[in-house]
Length: 286
Image (cartoon, rainbow, N blue to C red):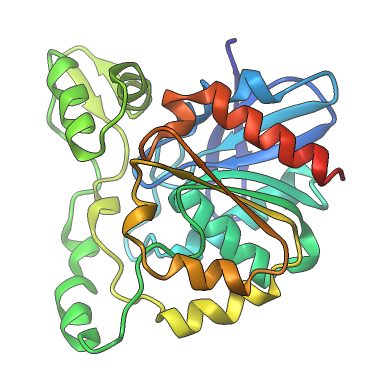
């Protein structure tokens, strides 16, 4: 199924995305770090129906979305703000989220901040912020990273003749099926006369100078009033995050499903992931 390309003009930036279906009820999908809207291409056809459509929003600097100007960063809270602005622009009063990795982190923190605006929350391979700090190294982190973005050229100037090594590098960064990796890589590229060039912002690779502590994250979790489905991959990243059980315990209404697959199981095993989501939706109708 071929999605429709969309663009959303926020007060400060233009975001791109893709839409599957024409149903009046919009499910808003947020992708992972360095991914893009193509992350949801395998899953979307299994979720939409006559009443339901899915819009995969691309975070700033990712995919076809605009880059932030110099002097403006890509902090976690910037993505939170953009997602809420986008929902407002799309006319979504109560947000029905299906999100992966960074997108799931953004959505779950939004659910704890704007609890009255979130209808349902499906998180795939992340719940709350994925990395936390004990703040012991804050001065060092600030010194190392605070100014880095402003010295970087955000635009890639290198061209590639062949996609194969780029796909292999994406798989090495996080195991997934080759077809899934190719979907993500292709949408982050543009074909020019000299060859393929990455259009995603290079500054996205600079890690944030400021992170929340686990105690701070846990201030948000009990405030989530929307029902939550958390989907873990048996071979994903969540097995290594020791703080998740306590976050689950603090959540008012949560189901945890463990399915076959790695971090990108929604791309590699879309039928099983869709079945879990639709069962959750039946149990928690709007």
